[in-house]
Length: 149
Image (cartoon, rainbow, N blue to C red; front, side, top):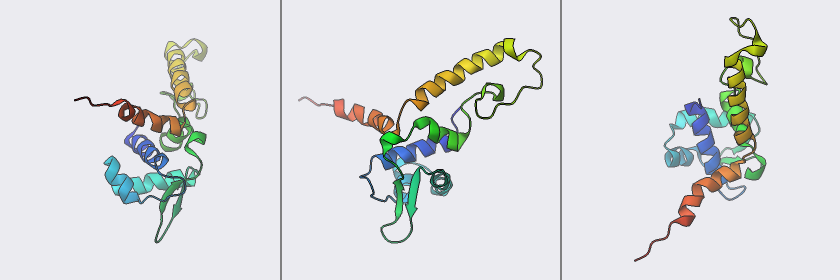
């Protein structure tokens, strides 16, 4: 399950993807616009900065910007940085694999096999969608709204 940290991080990244390239955005603006606690967002943006997804600048004209174009950032990479592996259980993880203590036959374990399938389905979606595509999803409803009188 996506944690609040992961959800808020995605919201913040989508917010930054909607800004003109290179234009810094204050943490307060991101927090207020997306109803995210500012202190928590500070921590999340720090992790995203350390992972190379955002740049930060202090002082006048400061704030956060995307470190790369939104079409070069995969949603799955953001989720992994903030929430860790995509697999529901460790024995189904590609990056943090650990064998279960209670498993006698891992090759035939029905729980592991279905969780591998779930992990692969999640990875297929998240690793094949970009931040730009995610941003476009939020705009698609607005583009189709037309009022007739």
